[in-house]
Length: 343
Image 1 (cartoon, rainbow, N blue to C red):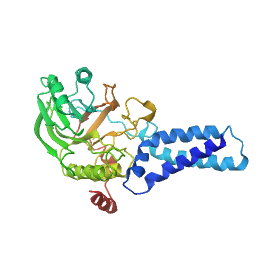
Image 2: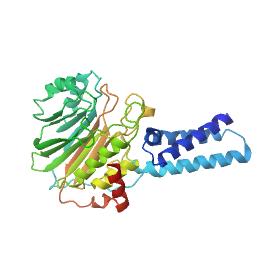
Image 3: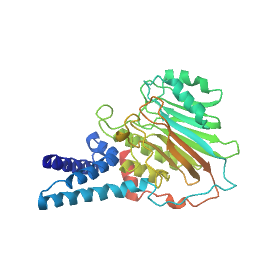
Image 4: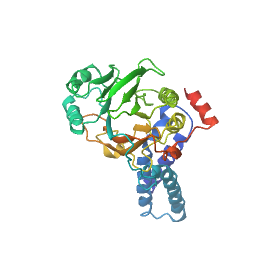
């Protein structure tokens, strides 16, 4: 038992140190995803240590586990209701409540009707699909009568994207920031009560042994999008499968470069992947928004056969409320240089 205890401690220390090393290889980046699970294992290992008797050496080990728990907890507590954030009430001059669903449908998922039923159940004004190919586009034609405005990027490489809206799309474009087969969607919308905003959908490739060997393409794509978003003068929402977690260095750089707010802070992790394994579920489908977008609800919905859970959001726009300005963090000169280097 003592040997298992020491092995677990060594593994936990290794998984904590690896993300600190600024190397883009997936071996160093993937442990960032498991910070929640690593913290759970730290607690379980500490409890295991309470049943061991190895005198003074045990307490050194237990002290190290306490240090790891505090180290990870300082980051993770920000994404729980324990972290204090101000609640904002909707005022009469704001827009009506709006809703969107963002879903990585998993290209090889054939349960099209389950997704269509999900959209019909929640009736969002707009929704975004990722990994949607020609078969998915054909299946979603059943929704076009209710969503007359669309912007489609149909690809068969698991990076297709489709955007459907009940709101008027004033203009829309497809960006290919770092590769001609990795799209992002920028859609300029106008609500029925006259509010304009921009919906930005992203889906960069993950660093993994089966996809990209490094995180360079992901980070470059996200930070290129951040530079574009910073120049947009209207309210902005950015959603998608970031293949990244909110506390990673590149996500923080994205948030600061784009001047956007992370609504998970003070709320919850909103973990989405893998949909079938609750204990191995990571919050990689992210959302960020500008200061005049106010979030009423952000959560995952039920599984429809994909490996990702869909993300559901209820929000409103208010140009007259400046209370969220303090949440916007801007990149330092060093961080801007680092973002440019990643791009």
